[in-house]
Length: 479
Image: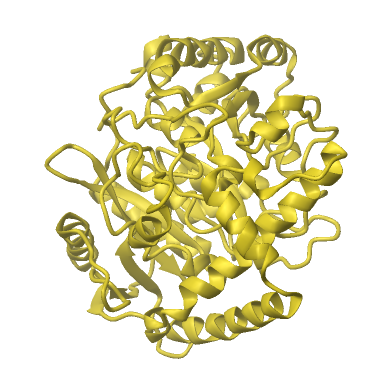
């Protein structure tokens, strides 16, 4: 039974508990056994709270929560949990074993939904890169091939879900950090609309509103049901998008209307390239959508061709990394220097420190205008969804994206299709619809209009029904 439990999605586990076919303790024990068996190969889970989780499994009372008794892992970036360690991938916080004094609103929502937290997953330092190879805990390995990266920054969570340690894990996304590891590890990864999930109470927003929390899952319905549980306005939030017409889970049960879908299978910016396997993945997905009755046209927002975006978006991120220096200095009671960060963040911190307040505000103003130019494609040109590769390359070998000298150029070569939609605040989802001849997953991305997660989830569920990925297992797997 333990072996079978880990092959079931989170709603399936919750249903078995509701029907008294298994207990929360049995599901929690199965997940713990999977972590103990597989984590030494992958290095996905870096903090354990197994004893506390088992006590909670025994003591919790089922009050009708949608995920009562289901195990969950939190990413070690965001998702603050009272009394638990939170290092953000840094050696600075690891050295003092920093622990959160509070539950974030997100963790409170996870608890109210019935989840049992088993521990925390590995992430790169400050979550500012797209591979999970921090000095603080070492690299996380991709369960499809352990010589490859699981992506980042939510790479630990992705490796844990893909390998069957848990059915669902917390993730967040500031430039693609949910969708990138979803693509690399064969998962469903939805980045919600800007402000859909509160970052309070200690944060209002980050990276000029580009960051957002959600989860990585193996099924579309799990992604939808978790979003139902964690979304919504909380006191003091700076912005919250309008509500959907019905629950996100209900949206996965109904056939979507016929949609006008734009397909982009090539670089939007001159001089870059897209791997032929990633192009093939997009065109295969386009054919599926046409078979389902949707209108598919080669098109894309012209604003994606603006090469100023890369520098402008990076300026904003760099200023926030520079602010992290000040925050760590205040927390540690001493001046923290850029060279105490890893090379990528040292570079970004210096960039941010050398940018004036006027430079930062100019960048945010440019992004605001860019957002309007991008969204006109949906609101004025009449497209419902943009279909792209999630990444421009298949998963990278470990070390390739963390090269001290080449990391920036290689990173932007990989993420040609993700950070734009953090800047616009649109929902975007990566689906595991393709793999290359080496057996590595390749995701495709669907981008919806602002606040239209319900339409994306409905379309994604329709694709999942006709081209299911359930049962496709990585090499390192608990089931």
